[in-house]
Image (cartoon, rainbow, N blue to C red):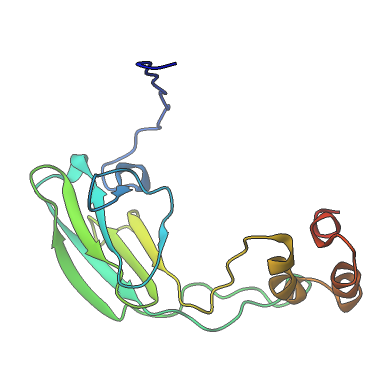
Length: 167
């Protein structure tokens, strides 16, 4: 299996430049793709967007919203994005089609090429309070919010939490 190479082609629906598919986050060293738009605070992320090379884009930083949405069994409907950007600034895409973003503190950055549309790229920065789920038992706290008390107790008291969650 040495000296072998393979390629994978993905079909991409073409839209106007500036849409989400035109942005690819990459590691600042090495340029390998980052397959996660959720990055820790203080991380530098390079974004490849060759279709917008040489252009100046609008970046908006939004602070995190700590309001919880209504539970799934609630009659209330969720509210949309209510907070205005904390700051707005310009970022320049270099001639190679790369721009650099720093995640800063918790919240999210939204980068777009045109103020008349929300199409663009969003980079999320999660606080330490965000529930990371690495194993079945990590689901318990978040599940309490979206399950009834009886369902939650059944999951919590199960011998195999993961299979009870998946049931």
